[in-house]
Image 1: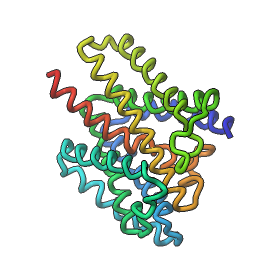
Image 2 (image 1 turned 180 degrees about the vertical axis):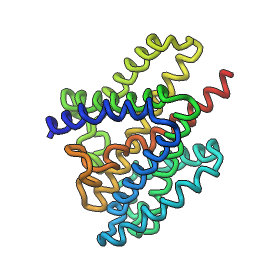
Image 3 (image 1 turned 30 degrees about the vertical axis):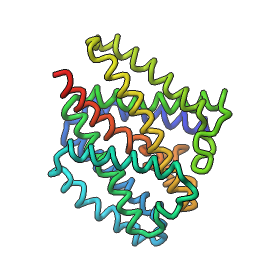
Image 4 (image 1 turned 60 degrees about the horizontal axis):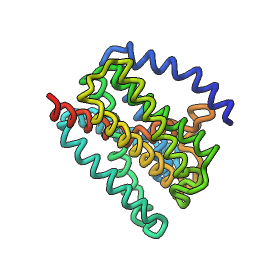
Length: 269
């Protein structure tokens, strides 16, 4: 499995980086739109919709909701999204005792999907348009690096379970590895990009918070997969599961990163 994951990553990451850096804005927005629609298709599985025909309904809804969301002001949307993810964390802290609060009904899960998918799409496109492709790439590198750091630190030293009732494989040692990797990535970027020192503490803090929320996004999808009785959200990416399995961390991390970038701008400019 690890070998297949590495081969897939080696092939797809350079292509993805090229698309992030070189695609025109409108083309990139369309590309992310397609990915989110694929994620909406897989979300139907987490809603425990069995019929293939009925699974088309949720992506069809997102087909209209996503374009409509561009009329929402980005800052209030990100504030509401941050509150949503903090609330989700508090709910997950009581899992499985409060399992019923995550809802068995299709309607409740569909609303959850809107909070997960729509702000993520808006945040990714906002970051690229407002701050440039390199800043968006920095966000992706943060998440990729943290994920790798967590995996290898967890494999080597992992003993204390982070959330055993949700994702038994995650450990506090793995989280520490993720944060340590984040630190080194950010320090490297500071020197490589010649970032003014007045931004260092704010960017480092935002990077740590972003990575922590990326773990929350990952855990939330793991929880819903556990409730739906599935191992992966899909099979689109060989060795990596489905689209949601690849963007679960990003669903929480991107809005938080975008919100933090706006706040840093308000403070320092």
